[in-house]
Image (tube, one colour):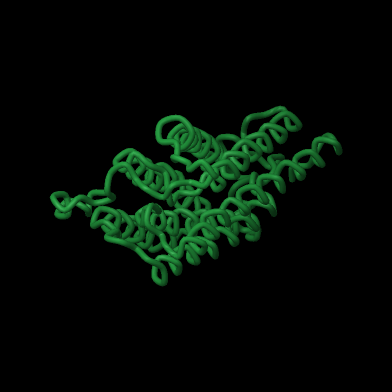
Amino acid sequence: MGSWNSVSMEVLYQVLGWIAFFSWSFSFYPQAILNYRRKSVVGLNFDFLVLNVTKHSSYLIYNASLFFSPVIQRQYREKYGSDEMIPVGANDVAFSIHAVILTFFGLFQVLIYDRGTQKVSKTCTAISSVVWATALVCIITSWPNQSWLWLISVFNTIQVIMTTIKYIPQAFMNFKRKSTIGWSIGNIILDLGGGVMNFAQMGVQAIDQGTLVNFYGNIGKTLLSLEVIFFDLIFIFQHFVFYPAKKEGTGRTIIQERTPLVAPADKSREDNV
C-alpha cells in the first residue's frame, strides 16, 4: 500500500484538496442566490443543469466507489502497482455529494421561478438518455466478472465527457444573447479556483511519489481540472470583455439584454439552444 514520503507534502496535499472542495462547493451558491434574488432563471441554460446532474452523479459513483470499496482499491493496485496510492481523497467524495445535492436544488429553482420561454432541448434529453442507457449496459456487462474498476472508470469517463458538453450550451447562449445576465460570474471565479487547486493537489502527490501514475490512473480528475479551467476562462472573457453588463450612473446593472432570448421567428429552433 502506498504511503507518503514527506509529511509536509501530505499536509499540503490535504490543504489544497480542501481548498478545492470549498471553492468548488461554494461555486454553486452565487447562482442559487442570483436565481432567488431575481425570482427568475432566465439566462441560466437548462441543458447545463440537466447535463450537470449526469456529470456529478457519475463523478460521485466513481469517487465514492474507489474511496470506500476495498475490492475496487485492490483491483486498482493490481493494475497500477501495489505501492500506488489511491488517487481519490475524502475531499473528492465530499465535493461530489454536495455537488449532486446543489445541482438538484438548481433544477428545483427552475420549477418554481420564472423560466421565460426557456426549456430543456431535445438534444440534451437524447444525450442524457443515451448516457444512462449505456451506463446500465456497462453495469450488466461488468457484473459476471466483477470488473468493478472498469465499471467505475466508465462513470469517470462519462463525467469527463459531460463536463465538456455541459458548458457548451451556456457558452453558446451567452454568445447568442450577447449577454451573461442571469449567469453568475461568482460561480465561475470560484469554479476556476477549484480547478486550479484540484490540479495542484495532484501535482503535489506526483512530486511526493516521484511518478505521474496518479495523473493517468485518475485521468478523469486530471481532465476535469483542465476542462474547468478552459471553459471558466471563456466565461470570464464573455462576462468582462465581450459582453460586459451596462450600468446606470448609480452603479446598478441594467437588466436589459442586447437581443431577446428567443426571437419570435426563432421559436421553432429554441430546442437547439
